[in-house]
Length: 145
Image 1 (tube, one colour):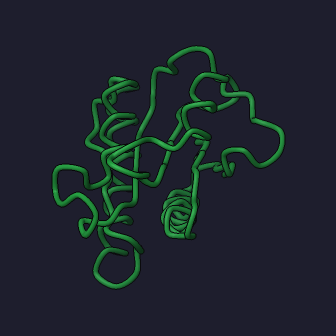
Image 2 (cartoon, rainbow, N blue to C red; image 1 turned 90 degrees about the vertical axis):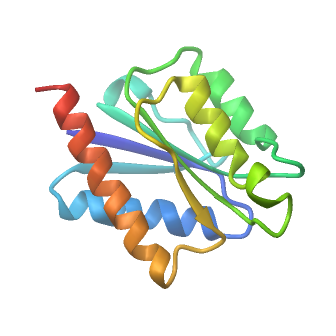
């Protein structure tokens, strides 16, 4: 089983989450390719069983332009999409916290709740990322039994 983890990161927090998700899935025996959105040749989505897309939230709950462009460049909605995001409740409170991830999950019709991380996945949030990643794998396997 293969996953594409595509992410946009401004401060490095979203990249840290993507790396931790990748490490977790690889430890579970999955093939994983990571792609920083806007960095180089875009992977061909048809090569992967599932996509995990991650984004920081910009401004007042907005999805960054590079993520919107990536979604448009895909040109279709893959069947198995999982979403994660990083944010900061200091700017916009709970209403706008990781709103880009919430919007992406809604857009893709993801049937698995998006992962929302306050700033960095370090400390107690590391366990949350690992558990979410294992849950994604379990969810995907359940859907494809």
